[in-house]
Amino acid sequence: MIARLLGAGLVVAALGGAPFQCGSSSNPETRREDTAGDALYDLAMDFRAKGNEAAAKDTLRYLVEHYPSNRHVPAAREELAEGSAPAKSAAPADP
Image (cartoon, rainbow, N blue to C red; front, side, top):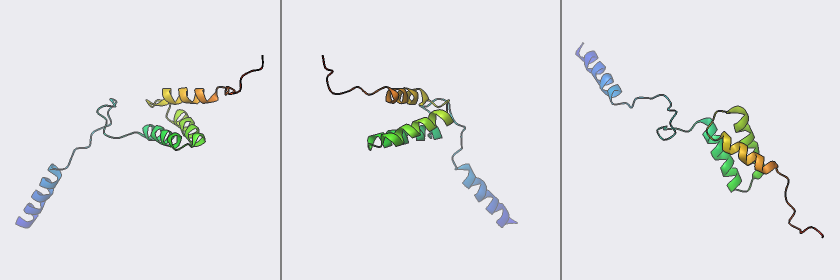
């Protein structure tokens, strides 16, 4: 009987010291973890930094389509729109 009480007391003490899990916060400053959309945006920027523009654009498109309410979607849409503009020719036009 004493062993059970002692065991139960140890379990309660161990659980009392465990951190509480909080719900996700809508404030990005207090949020402790990234969302899937945040991770996708970071991945796209990593692809771009490594010179893989096609993978960056594919990842940004996936972000926009699957996580439309993510905080990075406006920037992703802007980056995708910039990439779809016609490329300017480096050669001067003939007069």
